Length: 582
Image (cartoon, rainbow, N blue to C red; front, side, top):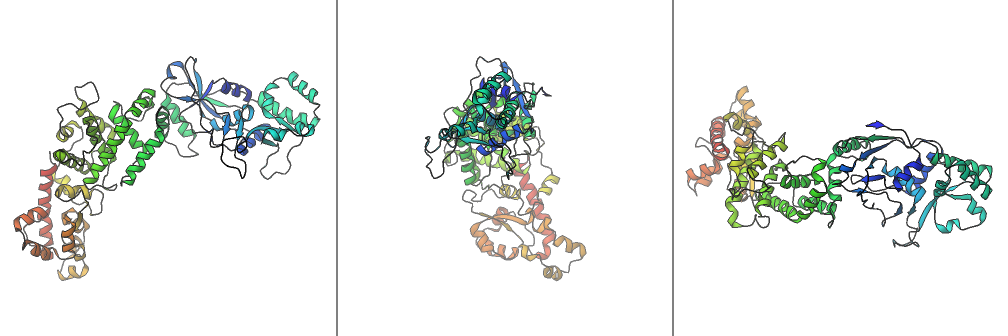
């Protein structure tokens, strides 16, 4: 990227007019007020700098695949605010404006176009009575004096009737766009003579003529490398002082600009809102990632993954993609997850892939015939979250998982081998070590009750709860209220035992937790573990009860908490090995 020889405003406007300067889809729409445009022109006449611009040279082979837009000239508040798409067919390359759109559009409107805004106490009707077109004029008779906003030259957007007064009034207001016809000294002098301008008017008009035709005001950097990814990163850095931007914002702008029948931005935002209303916070980035995972071999956020062809493919398959995402979140809700306990949204992308390409988008969650499949997915998801498979380099893991689906086939579809969710094949297909050692499991068992991973660990240990209807509770076996100084003194604990008694890695961890259904939890309340078990086993088989609640057959007195802790740890280690061990 190099700083180029500056050009005049006239040259820049000519390039805009001839569509040599275009706007890429990443650009926001024009938002400057008429006052701000007037202020910009005042700065020009006072020789103030208006900051540099960033341009990107787009060569022929790179003009296809992305949408570009022409500059807006006839701005109408509410009604004419969108830029028209520009055809780049037959061009020999052009320049994309990455930074400076608001300033260039303001100059273009001031010199070539109009600005319409609503009249006070009028309706929002799209007509000249309510929103009259206004063109930029300059008072060439008087300069401003002692203005609070610091302006020296009086620029104003005026309606047609504002300039139809007396000859004196007409001479006061010079239509700024007319300066484009006064390019050289001969043309300027002829205009001055024909209109018998005063010296004061000549001085003001001369300042305007110099600002447009002589001053090299447009300083710009030109990026000539044909990597749009690099251009976007430059754009982000330059704009970092304003409204926060990120790469995916710009990628989305390119993607949605190429949708033809639907309002992509509205569709994607509506889906984000719908999923959020169902309890899960997702972003537009997640939706874009879903598309890439479903259709692109490369799942990284790069521009070439969102060219015209890919974006139109996205649009063509949108309804099915949307329905799959909704169905998948419905499914994980029936597993008992919420936004807090679903510790990685990336973990559900392989589920989305499976549901989409198997063509089971609708009613998969509710169908009884899919119970085995749903059980496999549930167990796999909990396992992946417990093992934190998607931490760190999740793109690499996601790619490895998709390779399991697409191995030895030419298209992005699921091999007929997988009539059920391929949880075992996926686990074998990822490079990350998912072996469960005793040390790893013991560390898992230290997880605290309110930790976001506690749900998945307990859900694996207690798979038979009514997770679909959210009819479950995390419960302390030895009530947390039992671990008091009074009880510790009654047990006559030494210093080491005292510290262990109050150590949350036992009394508030998985070792001292279970899942109960809501009714069981209501009946247990703050009963001691021994009291509760004695009541429950009167009406049920003790062996079955102990097995279902993963309670070791040892003394349940609080005084024997250390023995209970050690034996329950052994039970839980074995249970986790049986459930999610390789």
